[in-house]
Length: 452
Ligand code: BGC
Image (cartoon, rainbow, N blue to C red; front, side, top):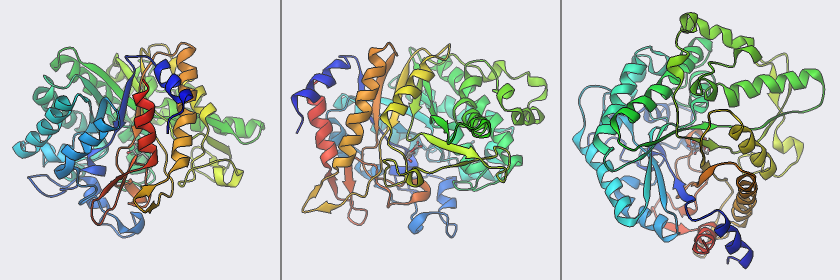
């Protein structure tokens, strides 16, 4: 139950603050090979032995494709006013380019129309990691043709949905999908090494800005943003080696994509390794092309990172000292819970010149939820949200122009390489029956938001 204190705080965010839930096509939709959809890199990657914990695949996920009406109704019933979702590129362009799949196009019209009918403002992400497999065969994000493919896809989305959808997010976490997918091989498409990572970085930085330009050109009165995964990076000790290691990791995790977007080019001066990007970017003539005047940036922070110098690790020469080792509060994924760090990170991103507005486009936590007698008592998640919202309010009161908070996520879903065991939802899903049960954290949000 919400206490009076909660009610007071929810009001303090202001009438125009956007409260939302976020999700992604590959994690929720299912219907992976139906209604004309082409395979994505995640459909293929999840078929490879040992890539996903428990062998989970996004084939059915939480069946959002067929259950979107019920799920949207629940988002509304919990009091949210924004629904952030992504378009599956291979659902509307099964080959990545070329022929348009009319059934796929129609599906997102239905989702958008339902949002509008319920009074949920749609925030649409163009790319949340499910690249068409056909494009991966041609090189995926490492190919210089990516810009052309992405422009075609972005233009199609803008032309189809731009009359109804005004809020757009170009990319979800560019560092996430380039590093995990093209350097470390832990996410789709499972590639490793610098020969993949470096061109993927550059093509992504270009697509990030170009996607913004296409949306600006084709959607009247658009509110355009893009999201960044970010983590405060702290040295384990105050030794100069650890401090330098933290600085290098910070360049990669927090600065690599936002600085080109803001028109500063890559943060090469603080990590000379990035000079290698020059191979893919002759004479840096593209600095201007990586710049776009975004209306907002989406911040997605799940944990701070503590690192120490480690000469054995190539390039960054740093390794993480995990929250479990440091014995600090953490989620079931081992991610540190630290609302003060969240506060400092928001302030830091706000201080970048050129950031006009911030939206917390994802925030949430994974715990070992159990459904007992029809109830999921996830008090830890409630505590998490309470602490993080207080930290956010503090930053807002100190002048940060933060306009929204989108909880990750509405229903438990396909958590990428973690499969189906890692649950982040406000609503529990039984993946055998697709039965939905609102968790106590969902009810907590409902009470919190009803106090607005
Ligand atoms: C991603 C989500 C993911 C969440 C939790 C974010 O990095 O955008 O797709 O489910 O983190 O891992």
